[in-house]
Length: 197
Image (cartoon, rainbow, N blue to C red; front, side, top):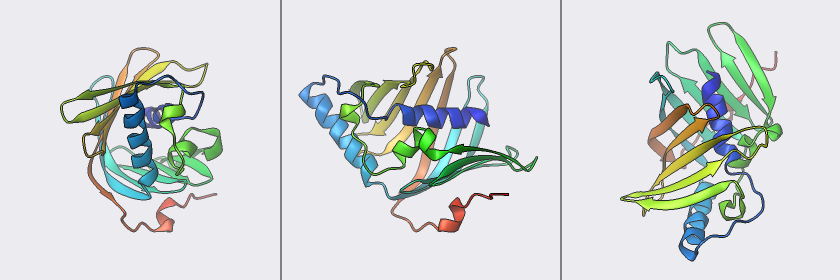
């Protein structure tokens, strides 16, 4: 349960704005394209498959409503539900009826859910490369107290987010792939409501 949250926060930390790196003209153009693509997303929904370090597989559905809102519903028997309502992030265990809450502004998730990313100016982005049909962006944790690496895979030449892999400080990988993605779909505000009790 916590691994998906850490994975998400690491992904978003890799997109945090910071001092500019030196890029080739092609890399600059690629990062501009990726930033524009991510900024163009207003709503998105689809499925996800998460493969953990020991090969454990979890699946579910995700929803994004910008600015600020995201939801991850895990398929049973995993009882995890993750919701950001634009102010807070709540991680629910629906089986135990418990929740942990974090302020959205205190996490890098706030950045992904904004409309103003500029990856070219991020010091945590470490590389951009092409492979057949793919554009791959690599990064590292932005927090001085955190270590690890991320690889984010987009389709190319038509950009679509497909997958990210986190390798944490212990060298353990977690891969999240998304599928059946739809953008520009209507999503109800009620799906992102956090129970404040």
